[in-house]
Image (cartoon, rainbow, N blue to C red; front, side, top):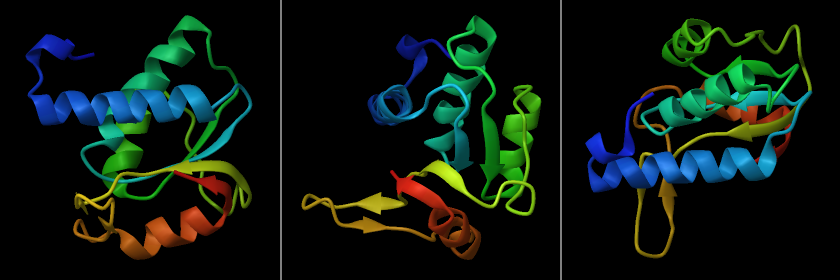
Length: 126
């Protein structure tokens, strides 16, 4: 885990967004779609710490990219795919760009199709 004092203001905001969203929307037993990109690394950080502390138990993660899958596996988190878990409770992803009116742009990292498929399998998307 990276100390928040070592992060730039933008990275601190990404971390806070990921942690806040996770705290409000992920519970034990959750079947979770995990998006792609730089903000998602903080979501994985949160999940790892929460599982290790016992705050979260029996979660299942469906990644939207090979890199996200690597991060999840490196964190010791359970990973599956939509064949194994076709219905998800929540999917959390970041945006590539957000303007002053909160208009978001997705797909800059090349994972858009997979992100949309996983998102559509979830009851809620953040």
